[in-house]
Length: 268
Image (spheres, rainbow, N blue to C red):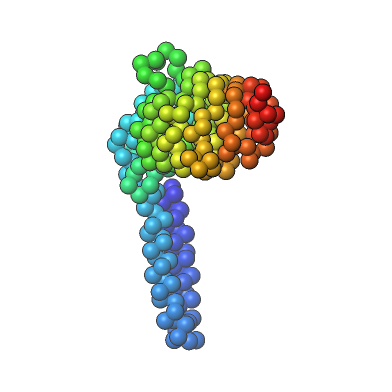
């Protein structure tokens, strides 16, 4: 769908540009000489805009996503097109929400967007939750092999009391992580976040995380790449790393009553 839409848009642009070229030839040969390079650029951009939509999914990435799906209870078949008979995972969607998976031109998954709280056409609320009868491996561990992932937005998906799998430490291209109200627990270890050097958005609101905030969220220079930060309604405790003091108190509270240091009251 995205590819055909892009193609239509490019076709319209080319038609209009061609019409403009004809007028230019009639009116001014000099304008035509300026327009030809522009047409070339437009054509190049149109080709590039359809590459990602037509990319064929990397087989390993598809296997990782199918493994993740097998660990979910999907009562309303939100992920109905996630299957081996539809092998291009770059086109996979979530019903009622739209695009779930985005790939780069090499077919590697770069974005995963899922919501576990979706209003269906009959007024029900569709849910995605961890299948607690399937405990063969840490939940969602397979996503750690999606090493080109830049964005994970999995909100209201019921992790049902497990933590972020350690394999996610492999996601060193990650810039955006949103796991709001996903019923996650455990901590954020240094070994987990130390490779997230490109992270710009971290939203863990409404989960059950506990323990300290790792100093590795700051660089060795005491700065951070994070520009959007929200961890309220958790159970974190201990000193707030100095690089995070730039965020307002509402990024940390309510909840996290054990946290201290700017922008909250000083540690004692």
